[in-house]
Amino acid sequence: MSRQVYILVQEDEELYIKELLQRRFHFSSRLIRKLKVEGGVFVNDQPVRLRQKGRAGDVLQVRFPKEVSYFEPENIPLDVVYEDDDLLVVNKQPGLVVHPTKNYQTGTLANALAFFMQQSGKSFKIRFVNRLDRDTSGLILIAKNAHCQKHISDQMDRKQVRKCYRAIVHGGPDREEGIIDLPIHKDPDHVARRKVMDQGYPSVTRYRVLERFDSGTEQGRSSGYTLLELTLETGRTHQIRVHLSHRGWPVVGDELYGSLYGYTLENELMKRQALHAYELELTQPSTGERIRVKAELPEDMTQCLREIRSIDS
Image: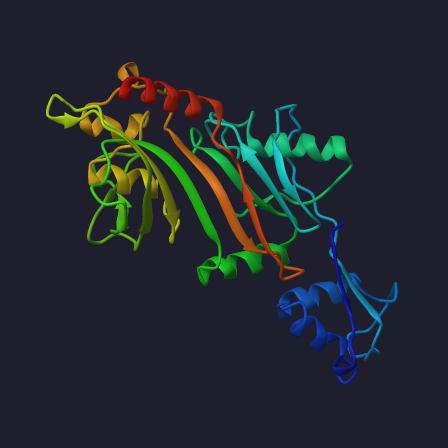
């Protein structure tokens, strides 16, 4: 069971408990009603009515109802990089689907999390705040309760969550940094692809060059590579892959979008897209503390860079 705690100060003595939940915890009216019905609000470890008032020094505690997710536990390696009462951040390995689907009913990150809870004695409903494509590696954020999920969703709406990726691309931009501001929509000619289209949804990606590898040209296209840092201001499906491909810099190993430029997995240095969710920064919903977590490049991307550097030299 997750919980949040607040110690009352003198200026809180004039406020009802309900008002404290609204002002100090920023709870919605719906959540407050749910806590009232389920008896989840305590002062000094004693149940309290929402129309009561407290005193300075009192400990106001909210205990969220126990929730569970019904996923079959599977012993799949799980790299936990951050955890507190509200949040869990894991570093997803490539090749792992986040959530069960029609085609992937088992062997997913959700199944791995169910096993993690089983082994650790923890219990919470799995709420994925962000998702990654199967072959994209890196940081995924899980909210442990509904309040935390809404708080982070609100942060995202206000663009207060920073999501930073790293990618190895074919070719690369002329400038050291820039913004790609192009709308994205489903490709009417391909069931899986997205495409830059005027009638699409607003989509903004910032890029910065970290390292260039100039290997000349091959068959009229650049055979050089660039290591890019990418920051999302929006979160459309395949956004980074679509934007980079549209600019002519497809991600190495991206079979779906690289094939538009004649790249195939047979002649790629990596057999999956060289895209990694590297850094995540957000505000902790209960404490207001700014949290930053990182996941270094996985071994396959590191090996790819070694091979490129050896070619470049």
